[in-house]
Length: 104
Image 1 (cartoon, rainbow, N blue to C red):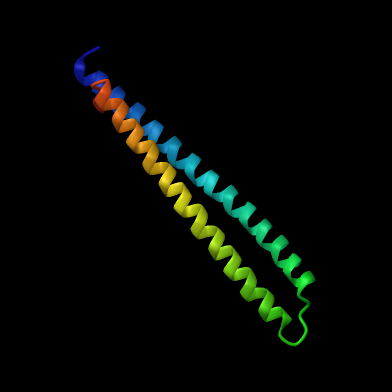
Image 2 (cartoon, rainbow, N blue to C red):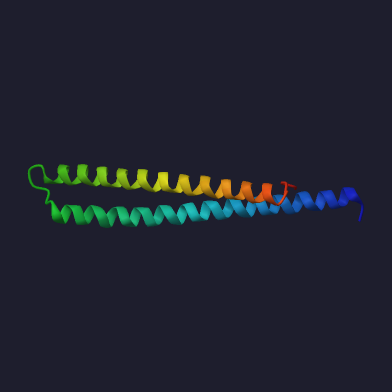
């Protein structure tokens, strides 16, 4: 095969991989949304059961629920960010120690 043909095949393979990664990301995000909606309904039902919707109970339950969910989302997001940064630093250290470079 000629070098140009090899380059074209490489680009096709890279594009195929990129499309598969994007489809996978979208599928995971979709399933995550379905799971989040299921948990949302379950937790709302629990709060409604614990704090019945009398005079202000429904509003109080919604406010407590919103605060709880917000706190959980912030904590998880911060933790994931720290884990991601640590993994990036570990990879960069590994590359530097082994004199590796990013090649495509």
